[in-house]
Length: 91
Image (cartoon, rainbow, N blue to C red; front, top):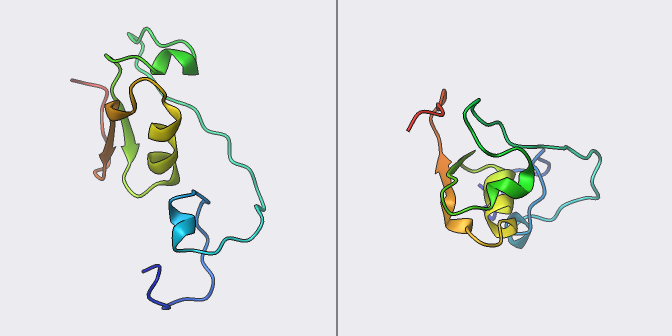
């Protein structure tokens, strides 16, 4: 809907890709996020995520889905955008 002049105000997370179409106000809150991993995962901190064998699912159309692949320096292609609920850690 962005770019179609259908609304005046919306609550949406800032992301530089979105800012190409949407004018954002100053931030009102800061949201901290991290990863959720299975008990068997070898990932113990955020730096461990940036490995070729690690697959990451992010909600489609989420700010995280736009932001995180750019921040993952070695293997940004390992992010998969998903739209269904109840995604599991199973392979």
